[in-house]
Length: 112
Length: 112
Image 1 (cartoon, one colour):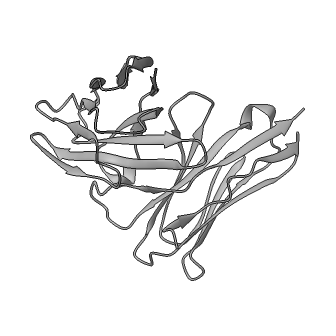
Image 2: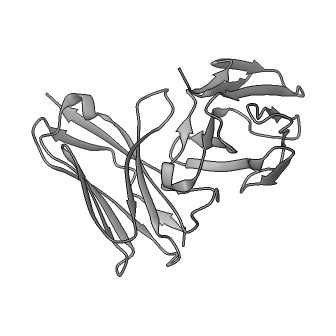
């Protein structure tokens, strides 16, 4: 079993839809959780960061962490064509510079 | 502007050649990382360095080498021992997990 599992998609939704992206993980020591957005042929950029369990909201984006189920989610409300990208979850159990473990990424297309 | 610069953007390598990918940051970050991205594989860690003159192997270090002589620079050499080097290479830096990574824009390496 891989440490981090993420459905690669592709996921195609109409403009204005609510998008749900998810990752599961196996390492119970993980406590730092992130979502990165990567446009085609570009480097990923940090979108959301959550420590331990709970929710975090930033504009149209909400990140949720359920440590009891080892499950994290990213919700995008009122999705826009500009949200079309690959979304990567990442996590770590250490507050130092231990490398992040990434999911494979989910490719999202928002159709106008 | 602070950031992380990768060069070149595109690189072509002949069979049996070594090539070096450049990564420079002016963010004053202690840690730097090299990842390889293949379609459907996500980001896989090659090498990382948490401090100058020290670095550790990642999950797929075979056929690669690095150096960290300066805080700002973390070049990656793809040696002839790497049998399948065609991929998108991403460099990142960080001042701590709680701040996430800053990624460069990547180098696409192709074997010809």
